[in-house]
Image (cartoon, rainbow, N blue to C red; front, side):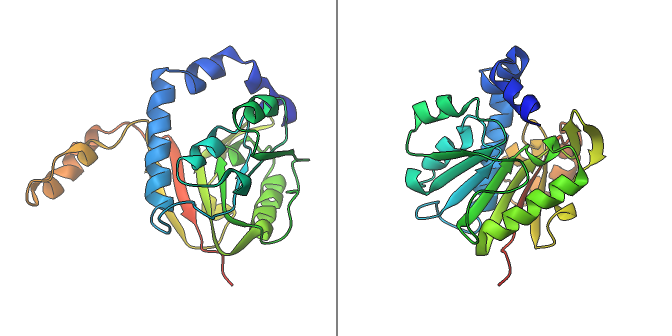
Length: 224
């Protein structure tokens, strides 16, 4: 896991497709932002005064994005099994706390966070038992009434285990609001409302949609 994630720092294909101005990068980034704002925005107006942990934070890209949703830098934390991109992350925002983890435990106390996020982290974990362990740690550090935001592919992609079905309900038995997402919005989402006509046409228009490639979900609230 550590070698796999550390490789993202220098992998030209990863940078070209997912971190630059490529079509894949900009389209997927837009979809991520839409889903995050829709799902998390359904339970809170902003991230002001919310304590947020990003699991598998890499270079802190999403932690910096959370600042645009009114989060305070001192309330943001990130963990990753590799710290090779932490210098880049700290250079862009030195106030965000980043910690290297052993991959099985989260180095924070019980019920610390209002929101825990993961972006294509669980699919990179190589075994079911380890995924269950990380999920249990997320439950431990999440406050009662808190939420988990999930963005991932529907099958594992770890070099140690590829192609195994992966769903948020496999790891969390709390309420789940789920969106199956493609690289572009559904065509019906882009049709201007026309007094009920768009509602009738949308199922047919959406037959032209891109295949769904990712799952976005809001998991919670954590029960008392």
